[in-house]
Length: 306
Image (cartoon, rainbow, N blue to C red; front, side, top):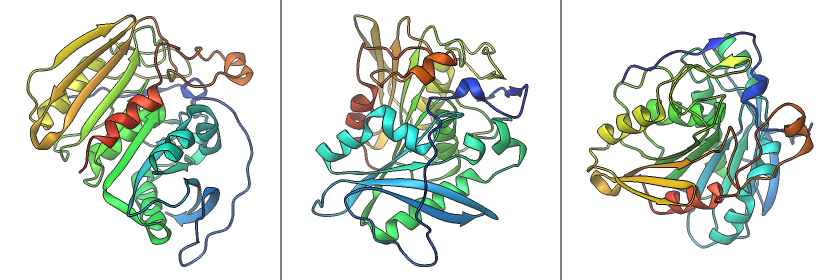
């Protein structure tokens, strides 16, 4: 599927953010695994000549290997902000999975397709960083390697698609208010759930150039989903609508699924997340209250293995 490029007007990507700019400290991670107990711990890893940081949330002990969800913040966000805003820790406590919250270089992710900000300008190897982070977490926690999932918001959602396109270990991705950019010619089959508002003006549902500092010029969201239905050899999709939320679901080979959740009237936001004055001050759209995207994405992840 031909995917259009992103035109960057400046090096930053302030309107592909998801919020707070909290500063945090990290425990230094040197050679060897760092023990990770229940709760959140901060870590440092050297990759590609850069010092990269990430946070891990681990619920109380559960029997057997744990699924891992990697949650990718939006442009100008952070791992700490993503942990605070999207409610993944509560889901992890209830279901017994581990969550990783990595930090993008310069608060952005290099997704290819000329996106985004400092990470794209400096050609940061974010696929390599995230892969190394997952391997490092696996040294300290018994991870189910068939149940590694990647979720993302905005620039982070684009990065989730990049991981699906360029790796073979991701069982499923969950993309919210994002799109797919760059080449994705021969990806491994991967289950996909995509959540998008019809009134998103930053990354538009119809694929037209978005507003703001980073004018994302991607394909229509329906075209992205059709691409993954072809990759996964899916049956024709089935649709249902309840109030403002429409769901299109295609069942595919090897028990994979490609699903699109469309929220009528919603903008550039994560449905069910927490709003904040910092988001409102710089023009973020208020979160839709129509449904809980985190709960829906986790239910989707829980039904799929690699």
